[in-house]
View 1 (cartoon, rainbow, N blue to C red):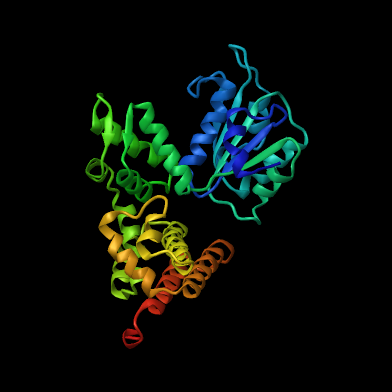
View 2 (tube, helix red, strand yellow):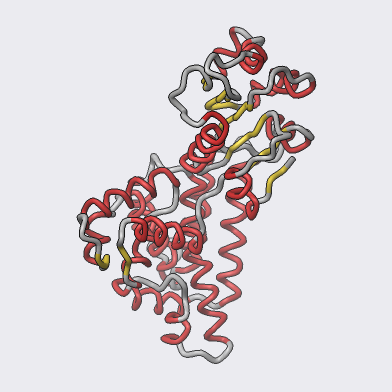
Length: 344
């Protein structure tokens, strides 16, 4: 069974009792871990309970494929249903899980946590097609869900954030749910126990992840057509996932495209930029407006197509993903540069 994104959180809170195994996977490893742990806690109550939670690895199943069924059939000495957690799974464990799902034993819930799996993945196909299993994709928060998460976490600590602070946090968080929560916890501790309002100065002083800042700079440099800056920033981001890099730039171009569309329908540039949610951070607002003026809507559409094609190539071919992403970004930057500077 394939669980849609709109149903994912509700399913994790109250999983279908008919499911014998649940796969959580995707590029947001923090969200995958969070959901896997929540599913386990829902059944076992405590992840640290050795009588009700067994944690396996692909290596342990390779050595002893029968161990999955043995753990699923085991009875908890303290009573209650057990959970079998399989971390860092990949297609190599598909045969073991296929045998288990065809003839499940015991009543334990098997929770499988994996990284990004493309549509051809045998593990993903198994869980999406089984009647007694479910697959939940875990993708990075979009701007709306991230803003909601920020409000939720800050509100629980008696804090609110002003508009610029929220925009800053949305721009600099969101690549990984676990890291996002950690950064928000750091901000809450920074603000102290008295509550109050988080301003831009507070947010930027506390949440300043270098990789996130570099991704913002990269997106701006690509839209500026500054090829030297693009190369310099790509060198700085050598450890970043190419998909994450491409999506960060795509988000910037989507906002440019939306703004250009509003301008074409009669809004002034200030009105169009002011309508964006989350708002453009004031420090780069003038630069953003210049980029809107430089990029016609049709060229923005072509740039977005190139970014989507690059992401697809990264996921579906054996080509080096970093090289694919870098080539696409440089091509877009060249398209942005004034004619006399192209080819330099």
